[in-house]
Amino acid sequence: MTASVNAAKASTRRRRRSSFLVVALALVTTGALWALLAPSGSAQDSTDSSEAVRAGRALYLQGCSSCHGMNAEGGNQAPSLIGVGSAAVQFQVGTGRMPLAAPAAEAKRKDPVYNQTQIDQLGAYIQAQGGGPVAAKVTKTQLDDADLAFGGELFRANCAQCHQAAGQGAPLTYGKYAPSLTQSSANDVLNAMRTGPESMPVFGSRQISNTQSVAIAAYVRDITHAKSPGGNRLGSYGPVPEGLVAILVGLGGLLVAALWIGARQKV
Amino acid sequence: MTDHDSGGEPYVTHDGPEQLATPPNQTDSRGEGSSGLAAPGGPGGVEERAPIAEEVDVRAERRAERLVALWFMISVFGTLGFIVTNFVGDKHKQYYTPAMGMSLALALGGVGFGVILWAKRLMPHIQAVQEREVFQSSDAEIAATEETVAAGVLDAGLAKRPLVRRTLLGAGLALGGVFVVPLLNLYNSKPGKTLDHTQWVKGARLVTDEGTFVKLGDLEIGGIATVFPAVPIPTATGTHYDPQLTINEKAQSATVLIRLPAGANKPRKGRENWVVDGHVAYSKICTHAGCPVSLYEQQTHHLLCPCHQSVFNVLDGCRAIFGPASRSLPQLPIAVDPDGYLYASQGDYDEPVGPAFWERS
Image (cartoon, rainbow over all chains, first blue to last red; front, side):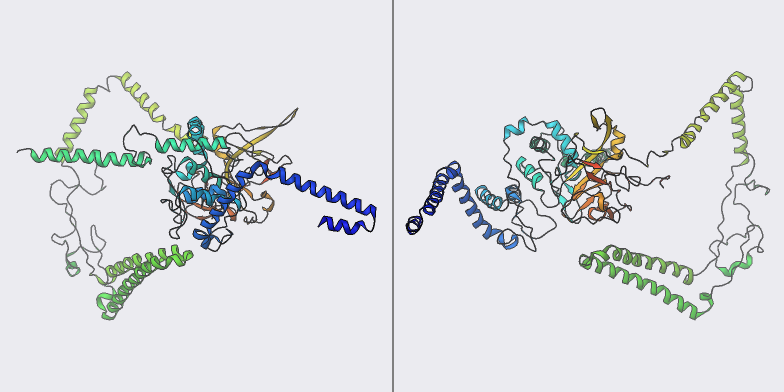
């Protein structure tokens, strides 16, 4: 193409031909340089992630698009997923809340429908639709090294009002509730904080830093998995159920024993 | 204790039933026997009552009967309404609670009014006199008690030991005086103006419990943070912000900062510039009993109090929409300074925070 144009111009004016040559040379050089340098750094990644996005889109169209729309734009029954990020996918699909079994005040935690590879693919697809918080991948070492006491302070200041001081969950309004955290993994806790699923407020990284959020996750792991030296936790609901059990079982047992002794007494 | 309660009347000395001016065997007698009663107005006498209309008039009796039946029917309809409301209430939420209350009131009240009218209008009206035994102890018992007390006083020797008697009296007086102290406290412990104001002042920065000054953009949309005032202190090198508060000052000044989606907030009249880019600040102290209100539902924008389930609508100036709280949460006017920090733009809340108190104006 360039050659034929240049040939046509060559017959008219020499000055014009030279300027065309410069432009053509510049274009060819730039194109060659771009082709050589630009994609070289991430060639492998881009094929991988684009494959994941493609697989994720296929899964999305099959399992999610009927409510969330063909392009994740949302619909009458479901919110838009643009900008929610792979953290939201990991939380909602990884805890089995999505796909929704039946419309209710709140999505219940259940066994996940998709395996982790599929969830990652779905996450990659949603992440490609406008970005958003990336799914957390916290390591055991990070949790072990976290400041538990500080995590506890942050938990009591930001989480305990809804999730109860021992993470046992509590009711909200109109049938909604803050779920128990006993089954939540550290990654679930981090993903929920960053994305604010359902009624939960969003706790962004500028409000609670990554170090602080890992400390909170470590504290949740601690209170929900720590051994209870005092016997049965009774749901960790505090002194009221403990007192109730003490009265019913303890005093009731004594009463039964006393009646039994009295009944055996020969008059 | 020798005197009798009934004043001038001579008290009875035997152990039998007190002799009232009522002939015996009148208990549970019908009104016809009233001829045996003493003259009206006499001691213990019972005034004879005129018969009510239902006792003499058959038509009045019928009317009363129908009235009672009407109330019972109202109760039936109330009960039916209660059951129906229970099942269809979900579709008409705004009428659910009042309809439940009114139908239950009719269901219970109908039976109640019916029974009262039945008893008053239709049941036989009987005048009856119940005889009672004398309440007083016998003379012998009274004399024995007096004797015991006198002997006790004599044995204690209060009369011949004035030192003991007077010091005991002094101890008793001092001990009794202790009761004056709480009365004085009642007078001394008026809160004065301390409940009318918090630690928020004009220009105070919003600071978190960890000591971070809150900047615009720190909160994501749908985020909530608890903030306290960092009071500005002018120094030679510029204004210094002091986040140090005592625990009581903190408790009083606790504020929730919420970032709403753009355009969601419906500011009240005159409060349009109390908000920065969707950020609203309200007192964290419930107007019902002073609990910390911080259960924020970011989809419905309801703030829920964990103690008694009061619900506040954040979009509508934190108006109380459910539960025992009746006043809105006070709003703190905020603005953003050139460095991006949020600060209290007009000083303190314009009304006392927390529950009502006697001196609240």
